[in-house]
Length: 60
Image (cartoon, rainbow, N blue to C red; front, side, top):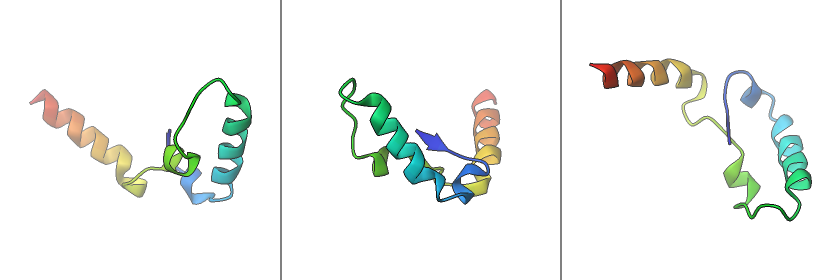
């Protein structure tokens, strides 16, 4: 699960989201460590525009 936009700028949200996710999944789903599973985008604020360029490139 990757969060982009303004969400990664609010670092307090990641622990809360991970905790809520763990509670909701309970024993329904085996997941890797949530610090590795719920993360900010790797390209920071450039993720959206880089994705657009990639999609455009695949259409050429």
